[in-house]
Image (cartoon, rainbow, N blue to C red):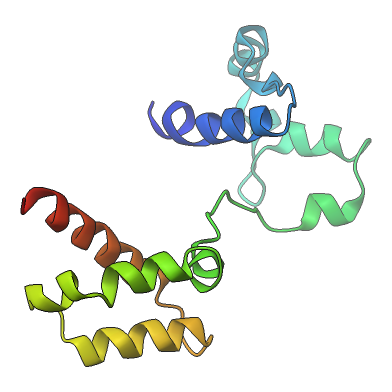
Length: 143
């Protein structure tokens, strides 16, 4: 009800528009959905394989390597962004005066997290992002 329209389809739409692509989701076509809903269960899945009919059809058109690889999501490359493009901003926000003066985070620990992440010793991207958002929210609401 929400994940597909509010997340996956929205991301596909934005990214395809950014690349000037027109993207369709043929499996969401009303006639395709009605057809699939009317099929007997054994055509759609078995105890060992989901999307059975779709996989059988795809074998005609796609190489085995494509059909057998694991799913790939739409994860944001946050770890890399915080190491490269967003690095100056990350350091400015979390290691600067206002954040230090607030006293919520232990400066030495925060500096170590940022350094370990920047140098690739540990992926702190999720924690650093959460701290960035919290700090930015505090800066905005503290005024």
